[in-house]
Image (tube, rainbow, N blue to C red):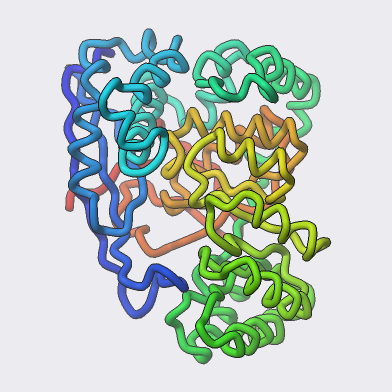
Length: 409
């Protein structure tokens, strides 16, 4: 299965009626720089990353530039040594300057890497989750670039973490039949009216969701407090409620607002301040305990995740394979989280398409708790095999690949 050509698509999906809005991003056009890895067969690998419109075309250009070393490679040979191949591509002598390991060049790498995993699974005729679960510990570690992590996660450490879970894997495989629990992230987009939020909560509960998320970060703090109490009252005392600030608050604002929002007993406060400010997150985490911090949507790479974990600046690890360098770096961050005994609850820039596979791997192979997977339904109509969420849980995908194939646009 030789990669004969690489092409891209600038795919953009305008959202309507306030969907997708948060305290910072209010002109959202969900966008995918799509990678296509062509072969001489009918199979092609499809990969995506998440952008919000602007720069999507530039990301496609970067994908094509980064992809040059892949042309002519057999997918099995490529993936057998993928960690080293990934490092070589990420460390491109010129394009690395645009990051390093962040920004558009890293998003391009995410799309490209995800296409490699998709093609690999299709070539073997299995869903991505099964492909990953069928790999030995040594084969999994060969997929990863662990550079700059050696102080906390060596190759030996990674192997030991995986092998330590082997004996109990069978007990966790029942998740494939029970399915993976989801949470509704769409009940409380920032620009939704209070009435719309109430209506959405009723729909979410009716659809089987017991966990849901509200966007906060208003210029008027009283709006956030009113809406948070509204959600708690409408959803009930037993509901799991998350609050997402999308980086809007300064540290002093976050300290003040988290103290006030504690009254609704949130499951977490997400992205409470600037995503690069590790020390601010550490300070806030200590001050608001036992309330937990969730972040990762804008933590761009494994090294910064390492720093957040080392300083205890987060608890819920929201790794995203469409914001990190694809499936490979997602697994790396999941292993880091395992080392630090932290739960992984992905952010889903892919609308859950890839992550429905990855959480199954995390739970069965790595022993992560099967907590929750974010559900965002807004792009369902564009996927060939949209994620199936019934009674509030993700159904295990059965089609070969990573569920990224898009309908003809």
